[in-house]
Length: 581
Image (cartoon, rainbow, N blue to C red; front, top):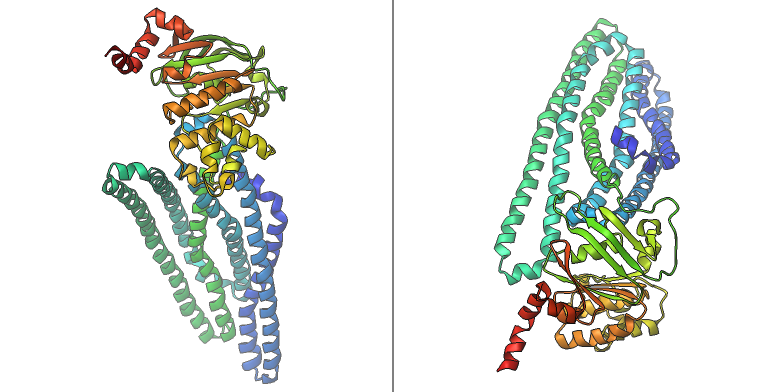
């Protein structure tokens, strides 16, 4: 129950709906247990006594009771559903807000399909228990309490003899719960794996087809599906083992009732109507006890789902505002690294070591080096996507941790190496970081990014709807839209993470020409593998294994005969060979 106690904050504010549901359930249960008493009176006090004139009145009373039960059942069901729906609305919002606040570190290892499963299937399982399972558990307690009370009032000895088997039934129910909860947890895990596999495969369908790996992926999905099937079969075996056993114990109770109760009627110690009432009441107790298996099933699923939801809610938010964080609408963009080193959580190797850098406003810093040299890691620290392990990182002379996170990132325009576009219009994608921007400013940003011409080539132009992840656009077109999106927020600091890698050399030249105007007054970091992308930078840092091994202008580095010169020779040797011939 600790899981539900920790999630109480989401459903207890709506306890009014829950209490109305339980109150009306109390009415439903009360009317239900009156039925056997109506049978007793009809058999013993009306038919047995020959008072047939009372039959119409009993029928009318019975109809009134049924009407009361129907009305109470409606309110019980309505407010029970309302309780669960409102609770999971808040829970789903909290989960989504948590996912939005979690740092890059979490998403480095998270699987999209698994997260989708938690926000949909797990939340729904929790809602079902709140709306239905919880009330059924209360109904079970009420039915057993009321039913047992009436049975003891009618005949204590018959009640005790009949219910001797109930302790055995309770043990079976307990054992069932111990086995079924881990089984449902396995089902949840297997379903998440299956969802993840489907999501990954659909996202990477182009690669699958390009590599002719359809059969391989089908086989891989088959194995995941087989695992999911197996966990369901194992759970079905548990269910199939314990449910018949519970039914058998319930049937034994009924046999004892008929044998001992029939003997008492023959001996004159019990009226026939009382035996009939007893028979109905026993099923009001045994039925809920057997149904308890279903309630435990629902509880186990919701508990397993709740544990998975808490895993997300409990995930630490490593990157967040510190007390007294400063909100600043406009930064000058003076970036300073002082002996900064960084190591990603869970790794032993240093991504960056001893980085010293001073980049005043308007300075263009080029970052070049082999894959894994630390170029992207360096710029990710500026946006506080990660916290530096040691050293000091300042913007405008103030430690970066002292800034409000939102205002800091609104001053930094980032174009990632892999450009992500939303399933919306081109206009909305460009204006994503500044929704209130005018159409004229959107077009100006698109022109600077060399995107305006191809946008105007679409029938709907800026109102063209894009497919998922920008489907329908070339890599270069997506990257140019991402560049335009970064420009519309008018950033003080501009980070271009290999932003022109997906465009041709001619387009790259045009974008760089436009950037020269855009970069004025802004601190700009250009990450690139092509020397042509950084050769105009004010200072170029050559990184290798997290360290700055060379620094200087393009001309200075060419004279050093170091790593930069070797990269230059590799990239331009074909051109040099053409000039030589």
